[in-house]
Image 1 (tube, rainbow, N blue to C red):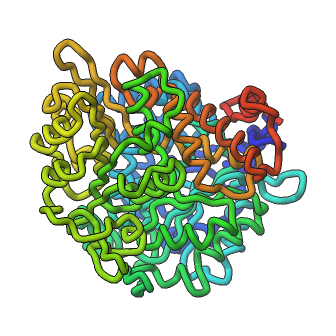
Image 2: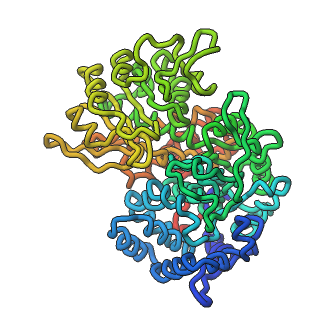
Image 3: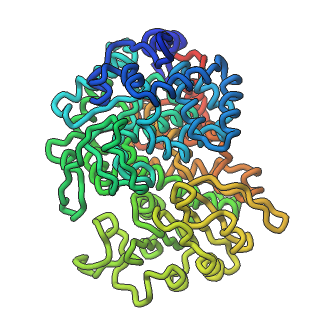
Length: 616
């Protein structure tokens, strides 16, 4: 059996796993394939299940009724018309809620609608809209999709996973429930919004939708998961929202239990000795088989790095926030090289000639630095990174410096800077970077005119890369208009969130959105299809190159550093092809898909899931 489901699986799934849609006294979600209580949030289970929870509050009851009534689409064309009408109001939260209801009513129509215009609709079901959706997740109707595993389930996690599988998934010929991919989060750091805990379920759900739309992962063999380890008070999220005490909050109404790690950072105690995370991952392997892909998502950086390090060799796993985000940042940098020399055949060699300044020392920038150092071979003395204390440095013994953890210490410059290393313009004048990558998250518009002019000046005769990767748009280090205007079109710009096309002196500049959606769908699809044993860092460098090599003449014409989002499925296939070829080369493939790239690509095409398309 390949990555996709047969037509009979899809039809059976709709009939038995999602249940028949029904309507009693008012619109509700779906009848379960099997009863659930363990894998629901405790508050929802205690209310008597999803339908009773949605009926227990007047607002939820009315929203469920309204969304049910407005979602009438029976075909993707009808779905597209309906969601576009809602989007015409100018605020996409309602469009997000509509699409979630469309999924509950008919997943085939839902995915068919997304595939009609992915460039338009992916920002509705994922970033940027999903951020606000998560902040209000409990205020939206609860639906069946998503498995919740709470700290109270320790010692019993396997039964929770089995319950969800029995209700939502099908069994294969070997008697095991069929699940290829799991995205799991503890909601500890949802995008740039902080701790949303159980309300962060919108992220694993949205991530898996992108797996399907952008690479053809079978959605009926996926499981979105929240690990509920408690939730911080309002001080733990960026907008200071009262979440844990909200009457509609579905997670555990208790604070996270933390301790100070050896690296002197605050970490979730439950994730280490007698690890809650390890129990969950092992339970998934016991239920679904050892080759099930387990993707970490939106854990706090203090936990993300050590959890990845301790699990990556034991499970088929990776952390998209560290590795996927790093890879797409590198893909954007490679794309910048392609824009300047479309015929370049050795992008990595060109990359090694550059000097890089990363502003912000979170997981995204540290991951990119690691990829540049270890996989691209960029010399460490060409890699600079800042934190709130300025350019990160250490003494020769490594006993003193401005680093905050071991991950920052790895990229610290040796010796305290003899200049004002807290001033960006001064830093640029001193180190003369070719590429400036911002992912600060808390310093919008910090790349002001003087910063841009300094970058242009130190790159005289060339084109500097300036990336503003912080999300959402309001947190961007610089807007597209300002970057292109202040640099007089000389800067190559990329952003973490979408910006409109800018016209300057008769030329159009379309900012490339440096989003890991270009990376993780193809990497995950490849790992599942070739039954990879593990996911080494090398695969993310290969994926980054595949994205850059997918640029076409239309991209070059508008200075776009990543391909147009309407080509995401094509890019996903290119990434998957390159990754499978590398996995086979490294001897890590459990299944050989072809003798060369062309053969691998043809095999992968047959394994890509699409609505209504039968597969073996």
